[in-house]
Amino acid sequence: MRNYWELGNLRLICDKNEEVLAGFQAQYEGVEVCLAFHEVLGRGDIDGVVIAAPAETHYRLAREAVLAGKHVYVEKPLVLNEEEGHELIQLAAEHRRTLMVGHLLQYHPVFEHLKDLAKNGDLGRINYIYSHRLNLGKIRREENILW
Image (cartoon, helix red, strand yellow):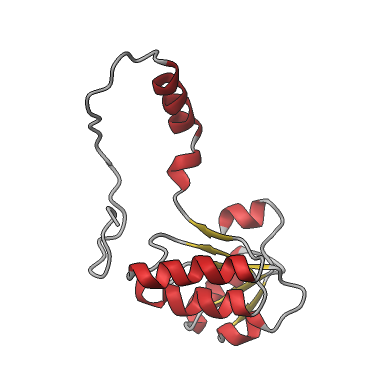
């Protein structure tokens, strides 16, 4: 939300928890809040939605948003079931909506530079890549970062 706020593109925050919404309202002056997702989908002045909810709800929420004519950015994973992922991709194409998954590190300047180095042969022949993710964030039971 912070990034969308800084870009001037945060209009409405939807959450089921009123206390959470009150905190966001205090943090992001002038942003509207609501408790029901259907209120977001019914707004003609909202072109796209970001889904940052438990992974088991991603499919249902993204599907509803695409069918309501919204562009959709979904925090990873897109879905927990491959068939549902294919369905969402097809629905987005049929409705000419953008469907994007939040694999943000793919677009980080450091990773872009590393990809260029590898592609140009500057790193020599790469046999394998090994890395450490030092900030694990929340431990989640219903999803795995490898998905």
